[in-house]
Length: 94
Image (tube, rainbow, N blue to C red; front, side, top):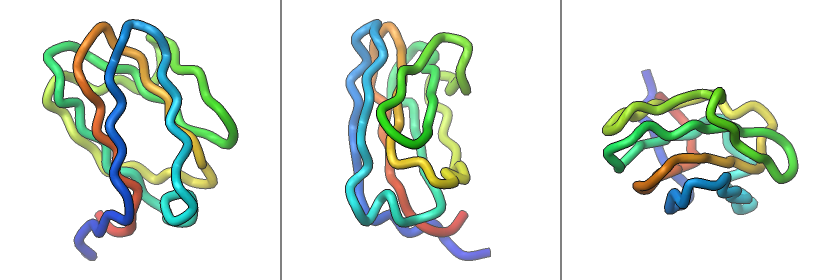
């Protein structure tokens, strides 16, 4: 198993509305996304091609949860949560 190697880092501050983050060129070229919910409430997450709008029924990250996800061709990530910060690091590995 290859360790996860990030190529960029993004922070999305949750405001109660969907927040979109376009991935930088190196981030759009890699295959994985490390995501971490640094807040105390759940955050819903959506990723895809072009600007995204997250809704409460999307992939949910519990408080303190982290995952490495296969991002496919996604070049944008959106999240929605009442408060807290979502940390996103595109990269390679597991």
